[in-house]
Length: 251
Ligand code: PGA
Image (cartoon, rainbow, N blue to C red; front, side, top):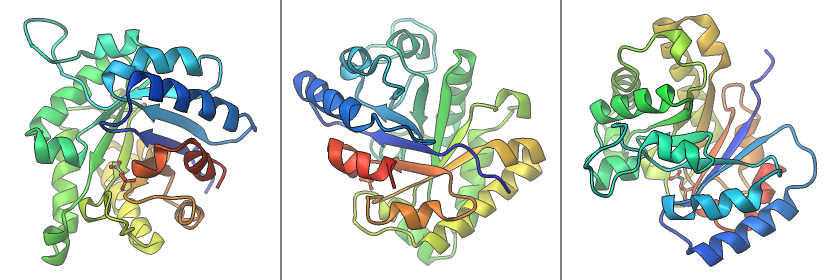
C-alpha cells in the first residue's frame, strides 16, 4: 500500500515570546531547505502566529493554531475564531489536545463543534485522541478511542472530512519521555483506520493521515514512521529547538 504524504507537526504549546519565535522560525527556515517528501507544520501560540507567518513565508512550512472557538464572532472574551486563524495564515488547527481536555474542560462535544468550525473555514483539523495511563491499565484503551473519535466526528459525512488529520497521543506518553513502542502505535493506528473505514468508508480511511504523538524525538521517529499506519508525528517538546525538530523532519 502506498503511504500517505507524511506530516510532521510541531506543537509549540505555551512556549516562546515573539522575539524567540522569530529567531526559531529563521533557524527552521534555514535548516529545512533540503527537499523532502515530508509536509512540515508548526503551531505556535495565537500571539505568535503573524510574526511566524512572516518568517516562514515562501519556505513551504505550514502554519497551524493550537485551538479555536467555534463561534464566528461575538462577545466571547479571550476566544479566537477559525476565520481569525485563517487570516493569520494558518492552514491547520489542532483540536482536542489532551492538555485542552485536562486543563480547559474540552469535551468530545466541544471538539465536535470546533471541528465543524474549522472545516467551515477551510482549515484542516488535527483531531487529537488518546487514553490515559489508568485507562490503558484497565483495558479501556480501545473503547476510549472509539468514543473520542465517534463523538468528535459525530454528524459529519465522509466528503466533509477530506482534510481531517487524526493524532493518536497516548496521554501517558506526552511530555513524559515514555513513548509507545512502534508496535503499540501501529496496533492503535490500524484500529483507528478501521473505525474510519466502518464509519466513513474505505476511501476516507485510506487517505486520512494518522499521526503519532508523545515523546517523539529524532531517535525514535524512523522506527515509528516505518509502521504502515503511522503517517507522521505531532511533536511537542522536541519541536521547540530548530535543530532537534529538523532532525525529526529528515528522519
Ligand atoms: P511531547 O508532546 O512531544 O512533548 O510528548 C506531544 C504533544 O503534546 O503533542
